[in-house]
Amino acid sequence: MVFSSLMFLFVYLPITLAVYYLAPLKLRNLALLIASLVFYGWGEPVYIVIMFASIAIDYTHGFLVEKYRADDRKARRVVLSSVLFNLALLFFFKYFDFAVDNLRRIPALSGLRPLGLTLPIGISFYTFQTMSYTIDVYRGQARAQKNIVTFGAFVTLFPQLIAGPILQYRDLDRQLTDRTHSAEKFASGVEIFCVGLAKKVLLANSIGSLWDVYKAMDPASLTALGAWMGVIAFSFQIYFDFSGYSDMAVGLGRMFGFEFMRNFNYPYISRSITEFWRRWHISLGAWFRNYVYIPLGGNRRGIARQLLNILTVWAATGFWHGASWNFLLWGLYFAALLMLEKLFLLRWLEKVPRALQHVYALFFVAVGWALFGLEDLAHCGAYLAAMFGGNGAGLWSALDGYELSNYAAILPALAVGSTPLMASLLRRLPERARGGVALALTALALTACTAYLVDATYNPFLYFRF
Image 1 (cartoon, helix red, strand yellow):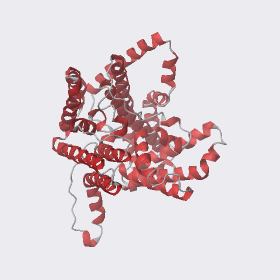
Image 2 (spheres, helix red, strand yellow):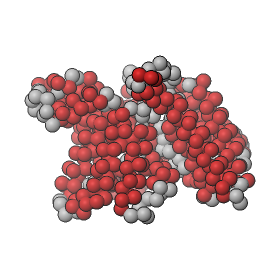
Image 3 (tube, rainbow, N blue to C red):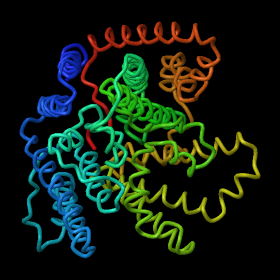
């Protein structure tokens, strides 16, 4: 996998960009489609057939929606057909074995056997994207795409194919046929890409090893300090890992002329859980809001219905992340917090000092990451007990002091990096100096990441498995 990463960075991407820019404007989507299929097929050639099926079926459904636009009943059936196809695809690969494993506990169904299929990379992302196409066409928010190559480029768009951000078709409709290319846009894309790469390689990978230490420990021997150090490490790891990939995707998109939505907006500066989820994985939140929460009625049918809608959306959000009960519990945990904030907590928070608001938000987010990061429920329960001193292992140990001293230098960097402080300082520089500093930092980040990757072990992006 390290070889694959290096090949992508130093061989595949430059060749792809060269072919893309040498191609005539009319053929650039075709070049992008082929490049995306090769990129996806490099890791999982067998599953390219799923890509072709998604392209063909949703492309056809878009045409059928246009055909039956005057007959709303038929048009709705077409949209339902598209949604069911995509959900069935997602269920088969992601949740079938999970369902079988649970159904086998019923004596009459004990003969069921899981299929043991590997999960196609990024299937949770691109199935949501293709569903958005048919729905957007039905709503009149986008045109039915007549060119199957252009539509295929949307489905397989490799810069964000694997882990988002999740693109809604209406946001890319015009860009697919009329996007701008410029040296300035390309340069900004390179800069954003390098920032994302540095987040992943230099920050997420480094702190991830501390989480690995405490995650692997017997929870009975975990001290309260150790358990909190582990979950704080995971909180930083998942943020810099996922926001790093999102930045890389946005940067790559700009290199090819696209503008993708921002997926993170410094979530750890939030003062409530509601604010946190407006800043974290913004594209997923927008997708569930536009295609689930609002169609269910949103906040238009009274507080009781709104709370039910929040519960429904967050149960689905949790389960979307993985075929495991801990993800469902994680979703329900945040649903409960969001409902409490809707009922009274937000009003209460406005009356307390800002510092306490931040402590409140970060405390409950960290507890949530423990639920998210530990899939075995027994292990998760024991780990949570250790966080609150409930396992009798004490408050701290010599190991905790050793690990704390080892990571004393990177922890402040992680804390500062998760705030807008550095970006704010850069903006305050004179415009002429700003460009030179940004260029120097970009070159330094790329050099450091290259050196790290050459000597690295296998360390994939966390969201690849979703």
